[in-house]
Length: 85
Image (cartoon, rainbow, N blue to C red; front, top):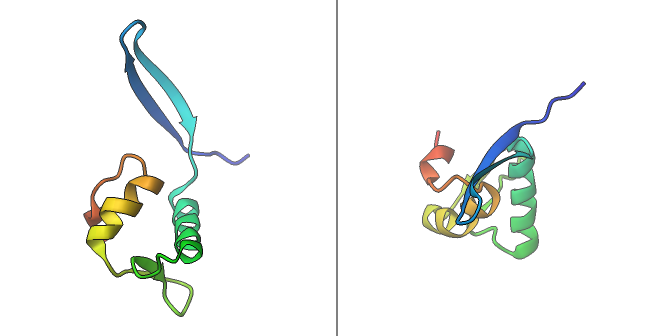
């Protein structure tokens, strides 16, 4: 049996108070692979792309990556430092 990670989403509703829901999420490597594929399709390889070996990637524009790409794929992530080694 495979286990999938879950994330807890919380929201505040004026009439109902706090609402909590568990949401199924893809693992980090799956999201990263999808993001790199999308960047190639969208012509954003000047921001982030696979290296020629196909086993690693490079972020070329950290500011644009953090502002435009990061939160699109990693909802609660807003810091580029999380991707640094």
